[in-house]
Image (cartoon, rainbow, N blue to C red):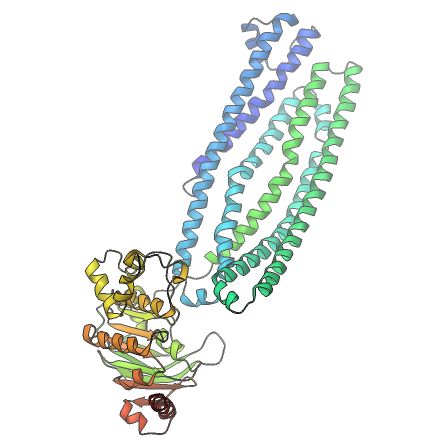
Length: 586
């Protein structure tokens, strides 16, 4: 609430004044009944009597009605004005608070480490950043201030009634303790049930998001019915959890109604009896009837307030779970220019407590070298290159870039010069030009053109109806797999990186285009160190060095001529692909 506390306090002050002036209006009715009709002497607030007299009112009903009615309208008008100010100030404060929560959440998500996002459920994160924030905003805008209204009404009403008749005041508030206790017990229960409902909604949202993102796969495998059933299962779970919440609300409203009407009936019975016996005036009895009605309904609304408070508490907890995740820690501050030397020294790495993915990995690459990495699926190739830009840090051992441990490099500075292109790149629902210039928004057209030419993309873009202004759709859905990979490559090259990592990111590109891209990389980025995870013999053959990774260990290292002369994984793959090429030619 920092930054909006003043408005919140002002809204509470406004609701207090609204309650005060609203409770004065029934006093006018008492004047009309007791003074105008009954002919009694006015014993209420002296300033109200003086105002009516100054307006021309006397003890005669005909001359009393007009000023009394006018004053009644004025009092309710003043009350309405403060209600308006309360609503305005609380709404502005709540919107500002919600905006700050969203900004803080988004900023925190951007600063969480790579591993968190790999494991996180996207649909659930969206649920927490939207629906849960909206729940908190709604509570702060309306229900939070209503707590003040209920408290002020109880205090002001108790003071005004006790000045008229203390015994009847006790009778009028007999059920309030039961309402408060019942409301508190209900709050404890509804908080738990809403937590289950909110989490089930998160699972439903995750299923929906996953299905929409993977709709092409669903269609390709004719799995529509299966996905519909899966969503229906989550939808039914959400409905059932919400039904439990609705049943609790039904119990609360019915029981609180019974308590409220019991209280009203009690005041009517006792007040009417005492008025008939002359212990209190008719105006006093009617005033108590009015006050009890005005008092009980806001107190009864405390159940709704407590319900929303329970929801807001759960939503706040779910949001806090994200904010409690430790951000990516910055351990280094070195921000020099990268030349391209990369060295692994006895590096070990494993995800949490699982078996090691990399074991005792050591090698040294000089600036400008092209390094090919080959290995079976699951051997740790992607994991190894992810360690270079510090997407992860090694469990043991060290990685050096230009002789400086990566732990001493500033992460952001390092990632600006050590760029990785993933096998499945993500494109934003923007134009081709905007996607290419994502990392360098102020890049001029010549810079964009140069990067697309190196990635063999320029001619393809020119064939589009809108050229560089063509929208690629969400995730690049309008582009082929190879085109998406080349856009991702161009997006990386526009930054002039000194270390380029291609994580099997040319797998969807044909052999001819692959060769063209590699030639252009050598020509325009000859001073950059390039790591290529690949399985094509042509790509492997032309590398300056080849690393063979098996079961997390480097089993072979050398040039093509050296490795093909020795028995091992590389020679087997080379023999298979060479034989396949000869058969294709024949």
